[in-house]
Length: 295
Ligand SMILES: [Fe+2]
Image (tube, helix red, strand yellow):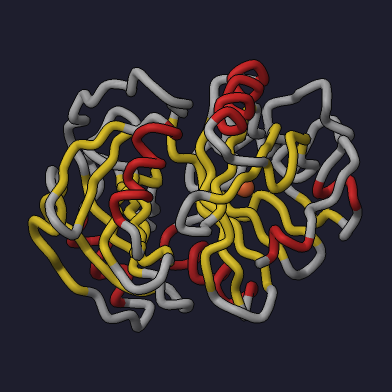
């Protein structure tokens, strides 16, 4: 099958477009690469945009962009998707630098845009603010975790990295432990969007910078059991949650079937598995997420 290789961007609607764009530019340190009255495009690197903000009545995640490989066949991908009984829409020029797109909805109504980007745009890193390495993953609350997990695996080629019990799945489409994670909580909505930082010291600098600018941590810093990443969560101005992370597990060679060994792993080697609903799965360092995380 033709599977997606990389998350490219996340699209949101947000009531106060200017305030949210200012947060991504001045606090997170992304670069504004395009702007009109109702839309702002922001880049990390190397592509034109990783975040798309559109003016809307409520703050919500509306879509995700995924790239297939430069030599993969988009027509073949569309045929493959339609073969699952899904209605696809072919769009051209839906966003700057993105030409031919196959769009369709996942079971919870998020619009997925799959495309090929043969040439990276050479967009550089920002020079102020936190400046993450990249957009890492998007997590959702879902009403039917098994159905949505199956969809991402069957339609887009994701692999299951881990489960927590039978209610929280972590899915990869490349070496990173998870690019999409899905938690069954009784509603379909955005949970958090995560950006990768360089290392622990970058995370410390980021937490201080957030604090100096009036943002407080919702949860963390800590180290997740599942994925083993260092994490710190805060709420962006429109209320949606951002995670900053480092040291996420990576499966560099799928044929080996285990994540790159690390001293903080308890399993040697660390293979995909079902974790019990245990505090260690959430945070090896102790504190559990506050109720506020689930709002
Ligand atoms: Fe996360």
